[in-house]
Picture 1: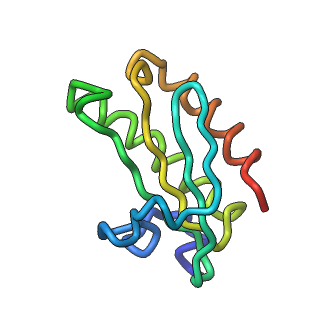
Picture 2: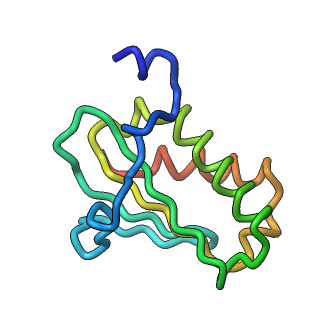
Length: 116
């Protein structure tokens, strides 16, 4: 509860192991121009986030880290809307050319479009 009030990104808000990343068990898939989003309900009271940013898609580590930082920050601000879902986000090629502002705006729109 306190975690939700402070809007932190705690370890409990992350998908941690490969078993939690089994994409065939996810019930919703939303591809977009820059990201792929997989969603499934979890048995916890809060949302959890997993990120897939392949070196094959985004070559430079500093660009992958920047994108991950922005996605985590956006998730942190919107996790109250997402409730009991496991969300995995995968990046597509070309995302590294997006500005920080464009990526934030895109993510804000995507969080609101996710099914309830």
